[in-house]
Image 1 (cartoon, rainbow, N blue to C red):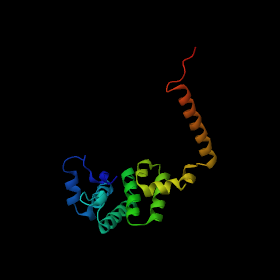
Image 2: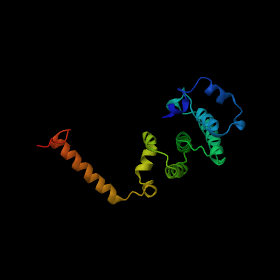
Image 3: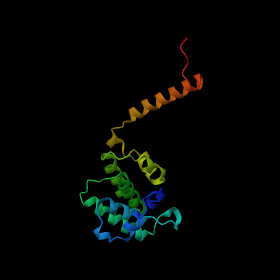
Image 4: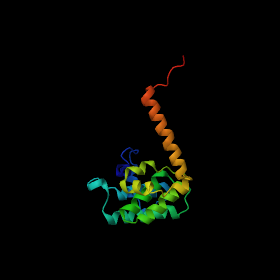
Length: 161
């Protein structure tokens, strides 16, 4: 997941411009990109930068969120959750996950992170998404019925006679 922060598919010069700019003068999406670049280290295990760099990146990202910018991208929310987790602050990560979900940002890609998956599977987002245990049971029954029908009839639905 940290490969996302390397900006390997970005336009020529973008990464150099962001890396070389004075961080205090960056705003909006440039600040998000700089924070993500700061947290990425291709030479370290998991490609995560040293803890002090992640803390610095997290500070830059919080400056972005505190700025009132109307650009609240999926990448910024994702980085916010992962930075909190890499700093060992699970409660802050949970808060960010809830806020991210309320903002309508998808969390599915974050499930590739084991800690995020555990948090989400704990039911943290159920109230935000209005998911009840009864709905889950009903969905499970429908899925089981569909699988049973597929096993019995094959992949295609039976042809009308």
